[in-house]
Length: 120
Image (tube, rainbow, N blue to C red; front, side, top):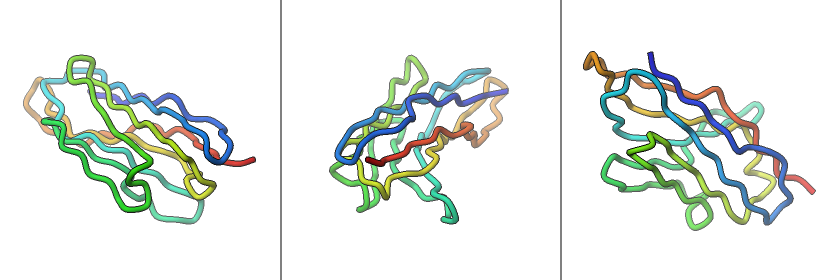
């Protein structure tokens, strides 16, 4: 079994910053791609940031230049630094990871989600 546990969400004013973290636990051999997604009410879940095992990152235009994804392979964690937050960034943010377990099965895992609210 593998689990992803997120932390760091909350309420922030427009223009403010937040840092989300996600820790992977369980019988993990290796972690491949790690990502953050978000889902606002009545909207589809969308990709916010992606990072490969060698550190290559990818962002949609909506967050490029404001959000930064990073990972610590030794700690099995991924972080999302969010700056210049806007009300439209309000959503539940989910961590996602492509994981190879110690039994060599490859699984796609999701965290439980953490709420980010940007409001004055």
